[in-house]
Image (cartoon, rainbow, N blue to C red; front, side, top):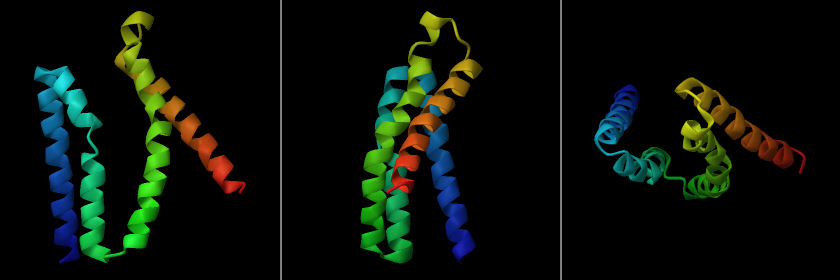
Length: 114
């Protein structure tokens, strides 16, 4: 039964990702709005709650998410500046991943040294 639940979760997430990608083709702004919604967090919280019913664990996850979401925002900077910089998709992706890794990694180092 647990395998079926995991497959169902993967299918739900995949449908959402494909739907947002398709909507973004027609309306980049609407795609951005949908991407800014915490859809995956909402699903993850619900899946976790129904599986474990552990509110303290969800609370810890929410606190960490509040910190980590802003730390991941540098990922978008290269894409926002792509036309001005003349970068292609792959350059933006690589630099975005590097920037997000740098900010999140720095935070992890600070937290690990406490």
